[in-house]
Image (cartoon, rainbow, N blue to C red; front, side, top):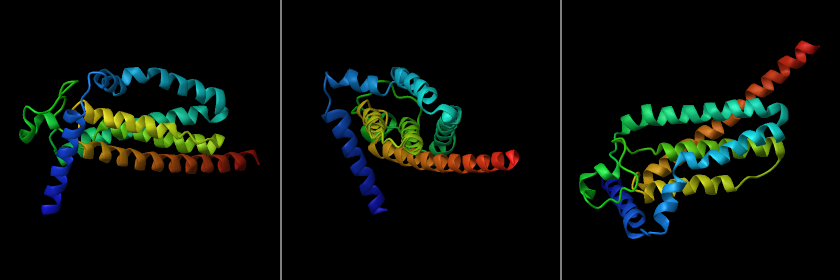
Length: 198
């Protein structure tokens, strides 16, 4: 119990360092923009174009798998993990009452894991491995993009650092799992297609 208590205290110290002590009038609008899903529509539009322009016959499978990965991760975190863990957001934490800079409002009561972190890391992970598989390209910028969203969630006061870390881990694991599953399904489909043509 002492280790768990120490971890929680460290988590709150790191939260205050990022949310309260590192505040900046210049960074505030930047961080709010980074975590806003609507601001990433150009990226999603680019990925849609990229799918059909570069992945060719694999484009539809790539898009469907992306949607499935996102929906599965979002629902799992919001409907299963958050209610089960039941950790309060920083703005609802009695120990931090009056100290949290809530730049975008408080939102729902539960904090762990961060859906933003899980959703962005499942996309980053699946896209990274899928594009490396199909095109032999390493899009390392995807990790920076997902990590920036995670940091912004703490900065604006929505989550503790451990919330975004937990979300990042969940999203990464789901992303790898779905990528592996997609490879297996593609392999099975190709075998059946080959047998059919014979």
